Image (tube, rainbow, N blue to C red):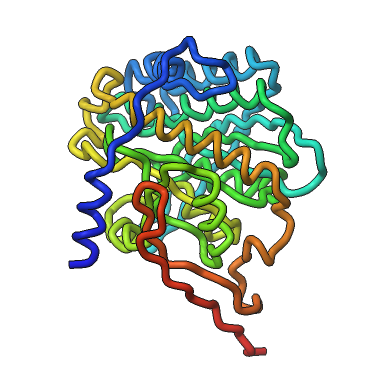
Length: 331
């Protein structure tokens, strides 16, 4: 009953109005981002296809146009689950925006591949476009304290293969202090924060402080983990890297179908996503990510620290329960 009421409250929320392309370059504009979606989501782009390679080349060109130096990690991604194992050659696109102070980096993540059943405008082309537009805005704003890494994974739809390759092989993986992953489970509606790593007290507080119109609740994760889907965030959580997972969840009938086209994507969803991205990049990009007291690595020997079960409706805590993680005294 409580979960039904919470979900009803979330579905009554609406995303903000889209902002036109003429707004300041330092402000996120969904009108600019949607142009990128139209370039990315013309056809399905599964791992290993020519369309996948075409989109990858487009991303590299756009990143270079921003004065950045992207690189491609080509590797064998291997994902082992209880049901099956999957493997494939992936081509992850990474770029790093240097910060002012040495330390752990903030990671923004989305996957650029799609399923073979649809062009993936929302899943996850819109997230790729939103990160590109966020980078454009950040280039016009003061330099962040921390390095910012943007990761566009390949092979997510084939079994989180790109994320697996990053964690297994890439040297930057050990330099990440916090990951923010962006997904779509539909093609419209506001963005919801539905998953965090354990020891999330400071993450939740930072989210509430940085983003004016926050939506999220920890009970959504109980629904999500029962679905036959997964995200790249799972791989980073398993590696002990703190993070948060975001998605737009309305219009789910478009998910992994031919209906996931640019013209059916709600532009306000991208606007909300972009405002969250830019706000969190500025907030967590300007605070130390090195301190495990703030971002608990969820290892057994960690001391008791704050963890929150949470519900946000339009930026306000409508429900919060403080929990603790017990000390493990086993040898």
